[in-house]
Length: 189
Image (cartoon, rainbow, N blue to C red; front, side, top):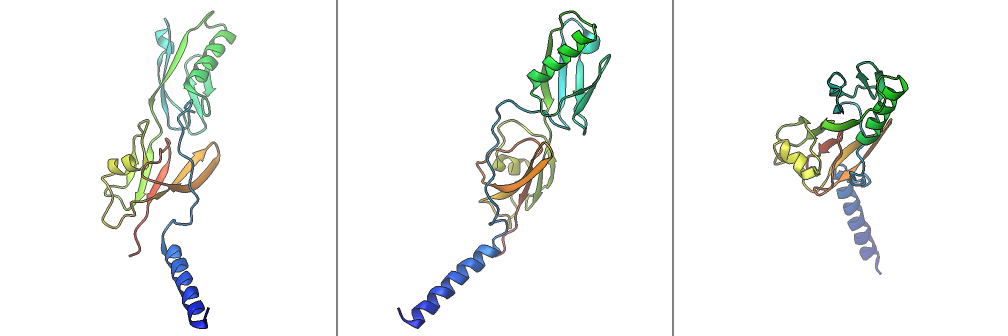
């Protein structure tokens, strides 16, 4: 190899490194797809609790920012991190423990999920209702689609699990989770 060839090789590698550095969010690690295996409740979810035969104990309740729901006769019940089924069991156990009902039958269903948030190069950035099965692309579509400057191959997402927020890269086919914050980047050139 000649000095001229080596210089060209280093210049080529430098140009590739420079282009990679100019790619917004290009250095983010990929984040795992959201797997909807036993949905965990969190702040902002709205649930319907149905207590069979007890209309006064049946209704819609919102999980507060502390992760609790306030139920009549029982008070605050921890809901964050629980599945709807486990919340139903916990409410049933509380009703038994307080001797309010002998053999309560309680069912819990999610009425409204935590919203997703879309920022950056979309037509209408903002907060949107989550629907099971949403991908990054369907979330962007709900937000009015990409602007002409938007990077369409990937976006960043901030996902919160409990008290830990993680940022990573998602592709258009990646599934998103309730509460995700998606940021569509602007192309540099």
